[in-house]
Length: 318
Image (cartoon, rainbow, N blue to C red; front, side, top):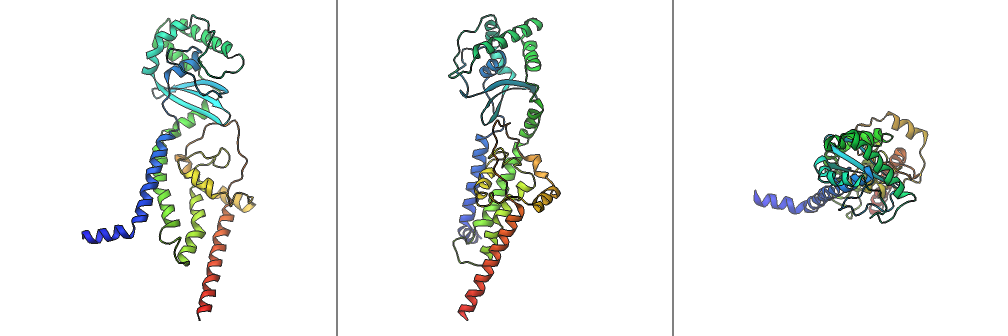
């Protein structure tokens, strides 16, 4: 039995190794691309009240806008917006409380300088306006620190983008489903496409693999996974947007047709439930999506060419 198992492993070692590598990459990248990662309380206080506590060392220097969102599920949120989108971070109430006394002391002092590397025009004036707004909230909270934090989260939070943030937060709590889906689907697609013979003898099996591999890869996208893949860039997933972005290069220059639009309207979108919502971009790509009919036509052409080659070889051998 042990010899049999060893033989099976040797036979499928490349399939097993490639699957393990892909799953490991999905988990590694997923930890690096958490939709709403934990941030710094000092940044939250600067974005909310304009004051800079001792440990504040600046934030992304090209940020065009900063602000906070209302607290949810025991977390407090801040964001900055730059050319390519909005980046949201979460902090705990305890981390905010570590600086509350220092913040309260700073609210009475006019801001004349900043540790921020690059600033926009009227940066100090904006911070002073935030400081005065927080000072008013502190007075209305009767200097109660817990009430002060609650007032800031409720009244200084950005209400304009709150709906999009609510959707982003709800999807982020299902991030584990995105990880599980890609850890299962990507190895399956890889094994279908490349295991047992991409570099071997040209045969019907290889023709099927080469022909239907692109269609199989884009099938989750057509079912709603990473729905903004061709407008916001590589977003909505983990490794999946990278694979689809690369494989779309030979196909995306071909335009959609009325049949594509009709088909996509009929196809259900169940995978939007586990797809992450990308940050709101200030700039979008206008690169076209990949046409389902083009992918089907490609598969058909590959199969026809394969059939013709097989017939030619059979005729030549006879």
